[in-house]
Image (cartoon, rainbow, N blue to C red; front, side, top):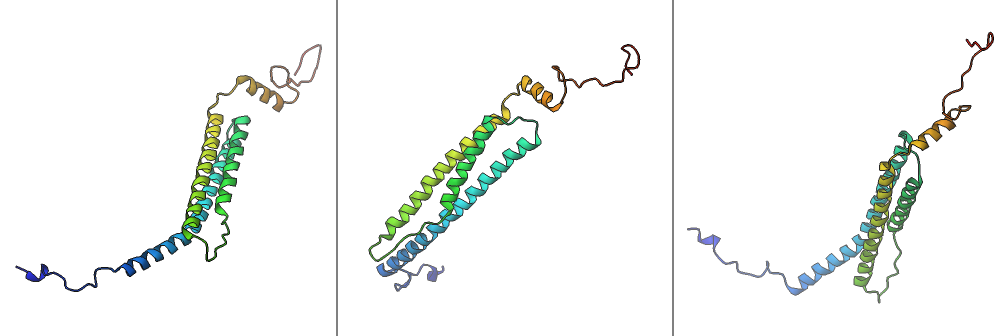
Length: 176
């Protein structure tokens, strides 16, 4: 039997004292307050990039497909632009004036609350923009819109949208 494995450790080096716990908590709180500003800034940059990619995807679909641009498309672009403004607001670091009377705990939680509320607003604006863009993409095409578009493309076309006949009259009504 290995008696030394069960021998109780004598001494108190492994047990932290109150002073050690207090110093550890203080260091953790300082690091957490320092990282709170960076976390909001990085989150804002990420949300802005997601918004930009979403706008680029919608514009690309509008450009490379035969889908007509309607008010749903412009609503989606406007909502996504609003989400981009919210993301920029989150990405810009706030300036805090700290002095000896400042409660760092309250400053930290105000930064966290600002980031949380701004993120919720961004999610709502982005989702509304994506839903509006999806409605624009899946809406059925009106056939009358197609005829009107073709009519404007064929200049000189008649009511039917067909190209005018061009020929040379040779003799009494015969065309070649």
